[in-house]
Length: 581
DNA sequence: GCCGTTTTCGGCCCGACTGTTTTCAGTCG
Image (tube, rainbow, N blue to C red; front, side, top):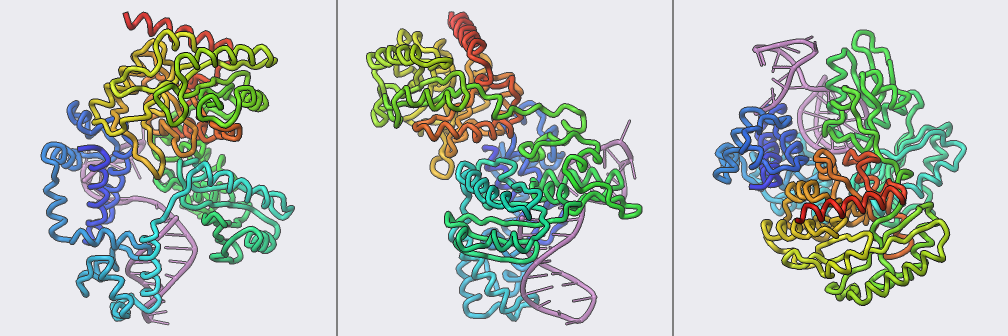
């Protein structure tokens, strides 16, 4: 049984326990365990083999036992019992906004409602308002909630949400009445997708700012507008919330609205043990309720005895412990990036000639870019035959002679064929500086087969980087069923770099596996996978993933200057050849 | 159900909002 399934069972268990009215702290224990399991990179089955389940934070004797049971029998007695007691259909009811465990239970106990359809029918027939705690308004809210669930609460890609937010924020920041301004929420943490955009400001004239923010020129619909909070729907259908807070509480509010929830809870628990209370209004001393911090995030972390934790790390994945012990990573910055290692030109499926791509990259201040057009078997992308690669090398050399202070590194994005062999002969690969090897076909191979296929490709001495290691497309296509732990270990053992593909739909590897790769000493390479000049601007999304994955400058190949990069690539190839023997 | 430089028992984050109440429970983020 996979981690995701076990986490899902624990989430469901938490919901069922909650409906049952069980101990809320027990409910939280299940939720926390599920969350921690979701951020593991190793399969529980392997951890169990070593007898180390209880070493996982949030997993004690009892849950370790339940995990073992699930691994061995694919069932959990406790969960099955719970399902007999509480109909599973209630799990979809509790997902309706406005319906919590108590009301869900009441609906079931008093009216036998256990499906969304039954709920809708009862609400429409006006049969709910006689239940204690229910009224006409509740019925209305439930119907709206059902609608919301059916439409599916979509998440927007970071790559779309961030530019959108930056545009809105630039407009606001231009107003003299706006003093401090920041995005908050999952957008500020740079999660790969976000549900809404939160913006926080301090202002000398909140009303005026609210008016500007909700102006019909800017938005499709105003959802709410008050003195300190307004919500709008943009023409893209994204909800944007603006909040105005007092300068004295700006830092506390920013920390609070940035989250994550799990991170905030940990901070508050810590504060409690120190005789302090943390809320969105500041840090207060228990004994006299005096506010001792709140203006800035920095002072909040400081007073809790922590180093300042960058937003991208605030997921309760060990950052608090690291901040406590003074060993937070010095995260890579966009300005550390010296070049782009994954780009396409008109030679395959890119939109621009080589020279234009190169000049755009130079304009960004990069000293180099790797040109990695597709290889022959990817017909749909007009992949290059060995002869064409040969010809392209010639053109690159020619353009390089014309460009001052800039270097195009000849490369390829070579297909990893079904059996793990490569789509171009070694003799050609040997003439290229950067070989990105990627899977673009036979995604459905089973775990063993596709893992072995990818690892075989990584063993090729000419393969520099494994491109988009999981092949996922956010909201469109699942990752192929690859054993990433094995791939990361193979990267370490073969000396192959792993790509962080910055394409907003990919962001592949993801943050969690970046962190794991770093732990195992694997170096990563950010590539934008640009097919147009404008896509060269996607680098910040790759950097965001890298930062969320705790990566530092030294963990990334393309933070090197050209000379060091060349040296590094040479060393890699030599070492890989040694190993092949 | 987890967890421990205050604890192996007794804790476990915090406040706002909503809709139903007549002082508050439930839900949310």
